[in-house]
Length: 166
Image (cartoon, rainbow, N blue to C red):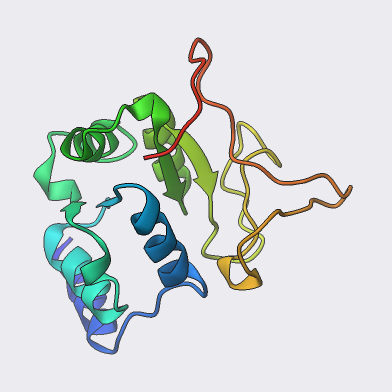
């Protein structure tokens, strides 16, 4: 683990770059609703990455894997973030770039928007084609799949009737 963190520190020292359109999306969301980061990274690399990518000022709250009893795929990070924001999980959206994060958000009862950081990544094996959002660099707006259908954020877990965002 120490060797892995050393490699991460070295890469982050070179500078982290946010996905194209990510900073604009975060700022647009922040203008409308409270936002937080719930990362499966330890605190040190999380802070370094946010600072290097120019996103540190976008979040009033951030939570790292080493600050909760169980990291992703457990729901702890998502539930902690929702609690700090005063947001009901069933009215919140998680933007996730990993299968582990998707599982965590679903376990917490959040809506999930899948934002792959690698082109062609198949992250959502349980609901293929239902939760994927095209690359952020392609602009914000309705997405269409191969059949011309509009993309969407997935529905909340069964039994939840409210839609919303947080």
